[in-house]
Length: 107
Image (cartoon, rainbow, N blue to C red; front, side, top):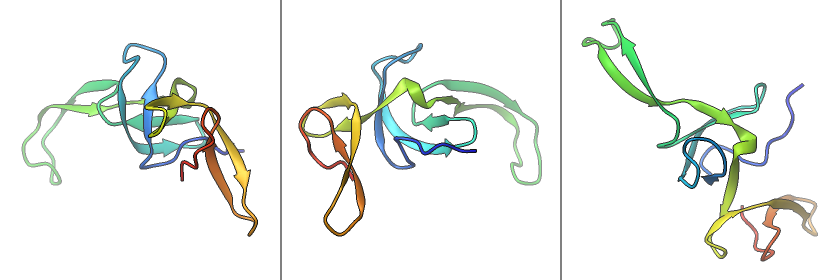
């Protein structure tokens, strides 16, 4: 069963582990089943593509690969770096993500 992740598509995150440590980028895709995320400009892979109907000209293409979700932290605009997040339940019953350091809502 897929577990709920602390990041979602469109979030700005900071990489905290691996070869791209310290880089920040926007989450392009999330794979909930495998607990992996694709981040813009992180884990760039070189792929060799053959020509096809969709892509008339083949060649060498660079694209981002997936990394484990545990290797990224959500960015807080007030703190200016990746932070741990918590969940706050508002009066109307909706849930929102909050920064553990400063308490700012991140959604």
